[in-house]
Image (cartoon, rainbow, N blue to C red; front, side, top):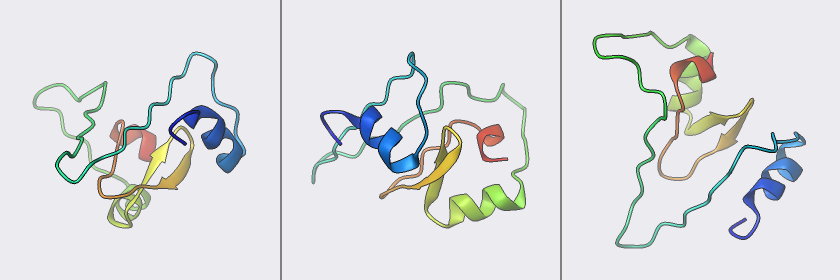
Length: 85
């Protein structure tokens, strides 16, 4: 996973990943936690409600990466609300 996360994701999900997509895995330590911020935050004052499916996905401790949900450990990464719809 750490040495070739793109290959692991492709094998486990059964999907091909775009050639220009980079996947980086960062392993947390006992003294360090990483928070991943979305690359496309909503403009200030803009709020969008999540669908029921999106709420269940987030509440269930899973996240959606590319097109399939995958398990997330400790923190959930959400690129933006549209990725969950």
